[in-house]
Image (spheres, one colour):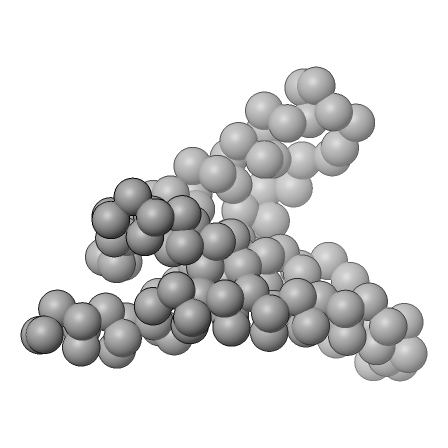
Length: 121
């Protein structure tokens, strides 16, 4: 599972870099808006969960249930959007939380088959 998480991190970082260059070239406003405002938050949710998967694995723990993944990302999202602006000059956007949670759901979709196979062995 560690290899898969590392691969997911690599792919999402590549998607982030591609988005940074591509979004300014998009002329369809709704697509450009989505790529500028929420795409990176969605892939950030995927990346963060893959990172957490690696960290949990170091301690021989697993976070594989959907409710655990969504709860963790919801708590992180609330922290990032409402606590962080108290000590850092950032702007809160409650829609970002939905983007983070969507990313964590996508992560669960990507990894659930691997976890199910791991449980059977």
